[in-house]
Amino acid sequence: MTAPAESMRPAWPNSPAAPRALEPSGARPRRLNPARVGLYAFLAITALFFLTPLYVMVVTSLKELSEIRSGAILSLPLAPTIEPWIKAWSSACTGLSCNGISVGFFNSVAILVPSVIASIAVGALTGYALSFWRVRGSGVLFGALMIVAFVPYQIFIYPLVRVFAFVGINNSIPGIVVIHTIFGLPTMTLLFRNYFVSLPPELFKAARVDGAGFFRIFWSVMLPMATPMIIVAVILQVTGIWNDFILGLVFAGRENLPMTVQLNNIVNSTQGERAYNVDMAATILTALVPLVVYFASGRWFVRGIASGAVKG
Amino acid sequence: MRAIRPRLASRFAALLGLAPALAILVVVYVGCTAWTIWISMTSSRMLPSSNFVGLRQYEALFANERWQVSVGNLAVFGVLFMLVSIALGFLLAVAIDQRVRGENLLRSIFLYPFSMSFIVTGLVWQWLLNPTFGIEKMGRDLGFAAFRFDWIVRQDMVIYTLVFAAVWHAAGLVMAIMLAGLRGIDEDIWKAARIDGLPPWRVYLSVVIPMLGASFATASVLLATSVVRLYDLSVAMTNGGPGVASEVPAKFVMDHLFERGNLGLATAAATSMLITVAAVVGPWLYWQSRRTGRAHA
View 1 (tube, each protein chain N blue to C red):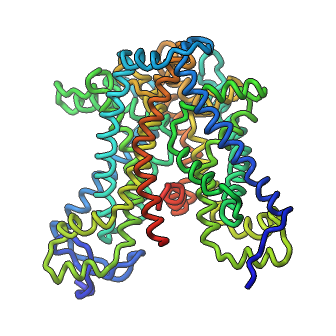
View 2 (tube, each protein chain N blue to C red):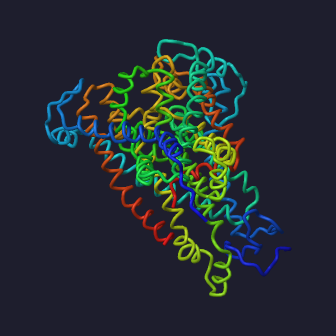
View 3 (cartoon, chains in turn cyan, green):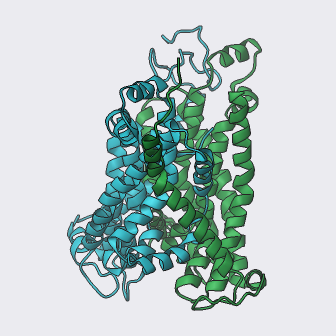
């Protein structure tokens, strides 16, 4: 036992003491006592519970349909095949057309890119205007945005469909981009406002003294400063917009249905026998973008959730 | 030092910068809400009508059996989902906080479901819970011929399968919030507790949990918002079935708007959802603003 004995830590009974820090450091406990065995058992069992669905998705997608019917859901594929993946990507049927989930993938990309840019641009601009500029009524605006973050979409959907039809952007990519900008506004504004408020006001004052105006300060001073927040915002919006189902279903139009909607159509509205392996391959393909974002971004993802959360 | 006063041009520019947000606020948030509430007080069916009928749509709504089932489901789902997610998330955070090996790996494992959509979550669990090929078959293959786990096709149990899937999706989020809270707690607490001879579980129960009030509040509000919005999961996993056993209010609104062509009833349902959210979030926002107000004072 080499753990430093004197410092205190929150511990299960009898666990070795070690200095407490944000990052675990220093000597690790070497001897396992019953409490620690229990702790690891709890973590291992829960981790298995969390991993099982992902594992089942992958093995199911690699099996022949006959093996799925005869074999066990947890077993490894006897003769792995990537055919379900090819089918899911290029020839699975969504309703009447059979062009695979790839159609949805490209629709989602076409929705995602402009939506992420537009929602972050408007959110950053609003957050900036609300933090440095004493515009009358800005407190009310900010409060209202925070309240709206909690309101269910169902309240707005019918009037928005009518307004969009009137303007002529219903069932189109521009329409769904506007929708994502509207519903991304509260979170994005909160994110950027909280960040700008934390910056030293001297920065802003100096730029004012130099004669820079509203947009100049935003573009040349504040946006470059806000790079970390922009990364967080991109992570939040990419996963959020990619995972959206209801807004894409209502506002994107039949030609532009996003991947989540197409996936649900492939799996849940099939006539006749269901190809579970193709279903699971399509499901993984749909989950791939947010999973890659998640594993690539690491702690940024958590930071995004934490700053996106309305907190005091 | 003289305060810098914005010149007129910049003032105008600042207003211009707020214009998109203002337009969204007025047109969408205020205008559309008012429009929805107005329709809910008319006799609109397929097409909107301006025939005012007072609260008659609400009477019809609360007499509607499918709505009653939806509200009941949401209550059961909401309570169980929040309790289990918060309890599991907190336990995971405490466990991970004991200087375990592979902390980063464990955190990734617990949080990855949250990055995926409810559609993906629903479809995976639909497959796992499939009585013919899923967990039930696995149990029987292991030799338990009478093993039953067919909740997803049973009217009385299906709502619990939604809770299952949703907890899998969200527990990691609670863990991340709680872990951040735990790491912010002062080390000295543990020294003091040791001097007093308190066992760790007592410290967690009577010192740490009260200190994590803000973390619990944040987690609760985030989860509660997703409860009211619950729609995708029900659509993907069960499509409201079997029968109407896993219907939820958001789905009731969508179906009556777009499939059943009953605008009056749909908007009355949407307005009821809004009132529920206001009743939950209003007090919390008030508490938050008072708290921050005091912090500034």
